[in-house]
Length: 433
Image 1 (tube, rainbow, N blue to C red):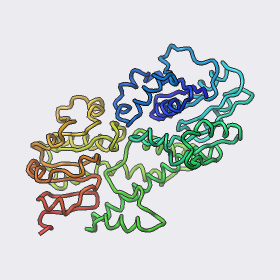
Image 2 (image 1 turned 90 degrees about the vertical axis):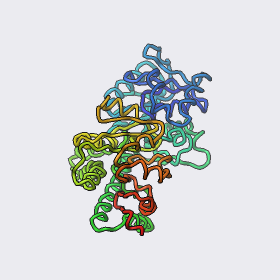
Image 3 (image 1 turned 60 degrees about the vertical axis):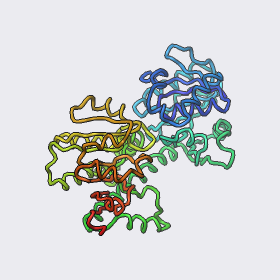
Image 4 (image 1 turned 180 degrees about the vertical axis):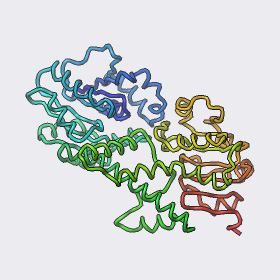
């Protein structure tokens, strides 16, 4: 099929690579705010496994073309695929009208953007009369494994009210839907709301578990026992039941806010979502409060090592990441931060500039610990999971480890002479004797 694809989101880049890989003719038009040269150099795209290589393959084979802002658009396409950011919503309608105006005959618009509920129907209204339909294909891309999540999907949520459009989308995605039918069909508004409702549920589980971790801390209970007990209940399960120092990310946080906006626009204020958002912002300060308590508020002049800045392992992005809240709180107390991340240090530098209380490392993580009083684990990159404990104990002057993701065994850490403070977990060296 002939596809015109718009957007500079991860979803747009992934769709361009995957659809051209299986033989569709894709004309990709990145948004003017980030054209192809900037995208090609973007760290977040280069960090995605396989994705940039697949884009290069498509360009080389001729199944993918990328507009540079001056190209003449194809005269006729079968699919108009929109993967725009929520802020580009107004442009989506103009794009739909422009493409519909320039060509005759059938056209299917695939809305792969996270817009307000009902937007796919509004886009269809811009397509003129005739055999023109708009469907909602919910963005299910997982950052850090975008290629795998598109080409081997667990499911597609397709909002479609027309049999012909459904058949066309199924044919478009046939190469990724062979082992079993992973397309879940529903009305368009239901699909749009399902995406937002899913994000809300996941965020609620995380925030609830963080609240339980705070209670466990107060009662002297190891929250890991509680998590295991809750997860063993078949009505609950283990997914998204890990307490931590807050969630972030360009999509998760944004989509949660989008759900809150939908609630407000419908006249139904959500006290629950408001609490979820408040809890998450508070949890981003949890590690700072633990550091403050340990040193009885005497933080000025101290040096802290941080492992991890990205909002999740496998990403180079720090959008809404807990590290940003932590840095502001630490600097306000005069703490010098030595931060290591294998991917996100350029994003940190771009966000905060050359701060006098910040030193960045992207090579040896132990270099960040040299001369530090304590270590704070913020992002659970895999190569942080099994550190050289004797080396850490020697490097950290106050032998304090603050585990924001509960990836370490408290008593194992304490056995090396380190003070361990996690989220709802703790251990001191004397408790291991």
